[in-house]
Length: 152
Image (cartoon, rainbow, N blue to C red; front, side, top):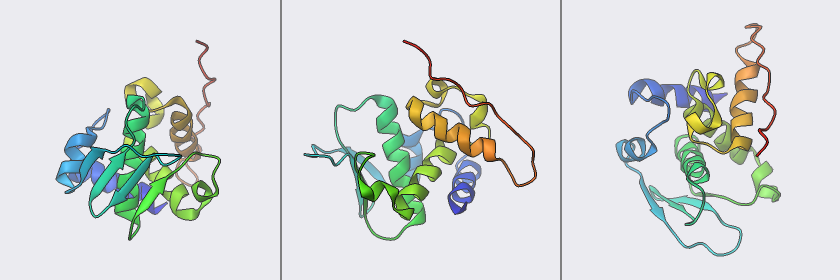
């Protein structure tokens, strides 16, 4: 749960609110966010303080990938990248930590009270925000019903 603590620290130190202003936060952390025309399965990478994200993604996915990369920056040393969810690298400990960090960062302390649209994140990632919030603090007894995916 180190990612939760780091995300909470960022919320406090940078006076964040929903939806998190990732452009401002990235700048305050000394990170540049650029669009890079990745080929193949690569969607995101962070190298030497530069976060590269594939162009043409929905805004919510772009936001999630930036938060994910900030997670790697805050939690891990070196470079990282985000591939399609079915690939083995996404199941590695560092990837899970970056995903959980992104959920805590974009959801904030009360993310379970918002919708995916209000948080500016993909619906499948919203479920992670809700799942983590549902776990709550040990002994909190907080139980949050996970929403059913909306029909379109």
